[in-house]
Amino acid sequence: MAQKEPVADKKPVALENAETIDVHAHAVLDETMGAAGSYGPQLTSEEPPRFRIGTYELVGVRYRGSPFMDPDLRLEEMDRVGIDYQLLSPNPLTYFHWIEPAHAQAFCRTHNDALADLVSTRSERLGATAAVPIQDVGFAVEETRRAVEELGMFGPYIGPDFPGSLCDPQMDRFYETLVDLNVPLFVHPAPAGIDGPVGDANLTRFDLDMIVGFAAQETAAVCTLIYGGVLERHPDLDVCLSHGGGATALMYGRMAMAAQKRPWATESLKKDGAFDALLHRLWFDVHLHSEDSVALLKKRVNNERLLFGTNFAGWDQQRYDVRDEARPYADNARRLLLRGS
Image 1: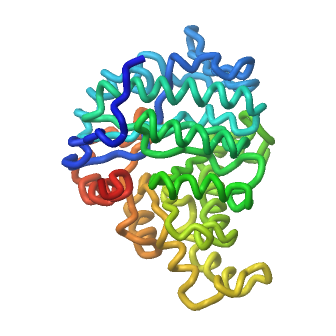
Image 2 (image 1 turned 180 degrees about the vertical axis):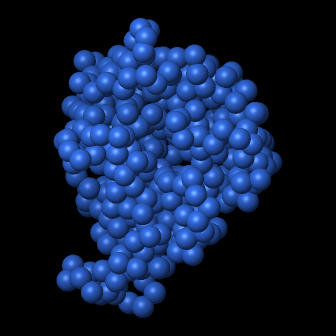
C-alpha cells in the first residue's frame, strides 16, 4: 500500500480551487471482496452481474468495468460532466451495521485502507470518507481516528439504521471524537433488510426501498438529531445528510409543530426559533432531481450548508454537464471539508 502523507502536510490544492465539488459518490473496491467473511461482499462475473451481501443480492448493476471500481473511468466521466473534485464514500450496501462486530471491523479496516490507497495517487481530484462499524461505538471511535489521522480521510460515513439510535447516549463519545478531530459526519441510508431487520413489505417492489425508504430514513434522522438532543449536546458537531434530508422540506411544518406541542419535547426545544436554529445547523446535499424540491429546501434550511451531489455512476446520476448547477455550492463544500485549513 502506498505511504500516506501526514495529515498536517496534506495540501488539497485542487479542492481549494475546484469550481465544482461532488460530495455524494460511492466507491466499490476489489480489495474488500470477502472482507466481511461469509457476509461477503461477493461480485460475480456472470451475466447479469450479481453483488451479494449476506443473503441479499443486487442483480444487474455493473460495478466492475465502471466508474464505481475503475478510477480512470471515474476521472474520465468526471471530466465529461464537469466535476473537478469528488468525495468518495462507502457503498451503502456494505455498511454491515447489523452483523457481528468482528466481521464489520475487518471489513471497515480493509475498506478504508484500500480507499485511502486509491485516492492517495489522485488526491488532486479525489478525497475519501471512512466506513465505520457503528454497532461497536468504541471501535468506530478508534477507526475514525485512524482514518482521519493516519489515512487522511475527511470523516466517517454511516447509515441511520443500526442497533441503537443516532440519539442514543452511547453515541456521544463518537460525536465527541468528531468534534475533537474537527471532521463532519456523513449520513446516507441503505435499503432495509440487507444485513438487519426487514423493512416495510410494501417497499420491496419497484425499488421503493430506495425511492421512498431512503427519504423516510433521512427524514427520521433529521428529527432524531434534533428531537433527541444530539445537536444541543454537541454544539460544534457538523452532520451532512443525503438527498436533501429526505422529506424534511415538505414535512417542515409538522416537524416544527411537534417540537412545540408533543409531550416529549424539551423546554429548550419549545423555545421560539429553537427548532429552526437546530435545523439550520445541519448540512444537506441537493441530489433531489427537481428544481422545485431544491427551491423548497432552500426556504427551510441554511443555504450556506447546501452541497452538490450526484450519486456518481448510479442509476440517478445527472448525465449532463453539471458545472452550472454545481458551481454555487463549491464554497460550502470547502468550508465543510477544509475546516479552516
